Length: 261
Image 1 (cartoon, rainbow, N blue to C red):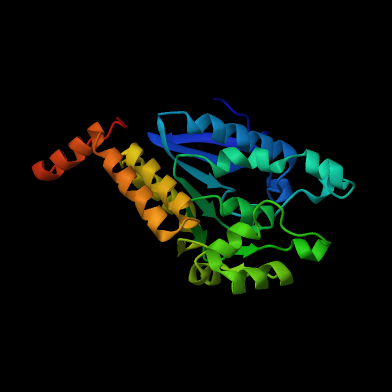
Image 2: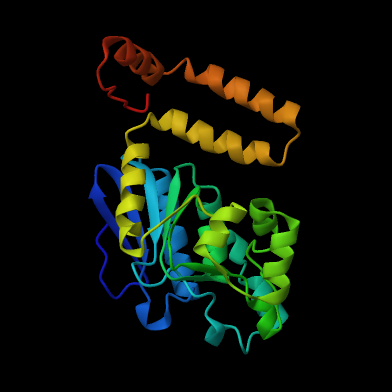
């Protein structure tokens, strides 16, 4: 799909198996306007069913990830208007995307930007990146998962501190707390995210999707229930051709050629 540089989200396909979605409102520090959210949602829905895509990189570029919601579009809104926006429906294709998602975070990931980053499966953060849920400072609270996903990622104490004070945490603090997967130099973030996505794209896609599904589903289940999900998903993969190819390639000491079958 061809996009113009004036669109709020750019879709790029830099190499086989990898799609890059780039937030593109640099004049507004990538504030999450409704237009941007709609387009991002549409792209995720499209990529979810595209068999040529095995991993998605989500980024705001090398300066800022996203500095929160678009306050100019909210300041005059009443409760019914906010409710009728059904932001949860817009974010559902991102939340439920079966493909692994790697977020490349440089600069601010504030408010909705932090909530968006938390929807990724792996977060690569630059050493000068920062994460924040500052909504309380303008009289509201996180509304797109910033309380629920944050507490699951970093625990009650750190989530309470972030949500009640609105103070940002550094990339290093986010890594220690378990919010991000890896921290690297700012100028290495985009390449590192692409390299990570490239590696995942070379893995068997059925197995990658099952790993993601079972980890997410198991997080809120009892250990016994989660282990049952794991056993059944593992057994299911033994029906795939990729399982046969992977094990045969291992025995033959060659690179496997996975086809998602």
